[in-house]
Image 1: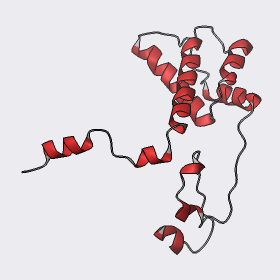
Image 2: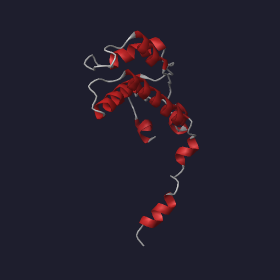
Image 3: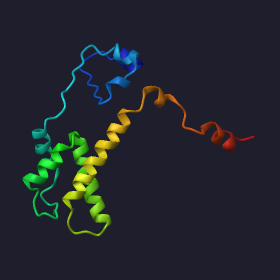
Amino acid sequence: LRYLESFEGGMLVIATNRPSLIDEGINSRIPVKIAFPSMTKEKRKELWLAHVPKEMVLDTGILSSENLERLAEVQIDGRQIRNAVLLAARRAASEGLKMVPVRYLLEAARQIHKDARDLREIKREDWEKEPMGFEKFSKINSPA
C-alpha cells in the first residue's frame, strides 16, 4: 500500500490470475483494470507449437495435428504450457528415455490444469489460516 500511495509517475502494471484475492485496500488504488479473456483453442495450439522445442524428440516423431488437438483441449495458459513441456521432458529424462512420449505432455498438461483448478477452489479465508498443527509445532520447538 505504501508503494502504491507513493508511486508518482509513469505506468505501473500489476498482473494476477487471481483477482478475487486482491486486498480491497490495494484494489481501490488501481484506477484501470483490464481483464483478458480465456485463450482460444487455436491460440493454445500456437503456444504448444511455440513451446515444444524443435530439438525435442517425441516418440511420435512430430507433434501431429491429432496430438496437437488433444493438447489444446486442456485449458491452460502459456506459462502452464511451457511448464508442461518442461515437466514432460524432465520425466522422460529421469526415466532414461531418449524420446519424450506425447502422452507425457498430455498428462503434465492435465495435472497442471487440475492443480490450478484445485488452487482456485481454496477459499480466501483458508489462505489466512495457520497450517494445521502449527501451534503444537511451535510449542515443541520454542525455547523454554
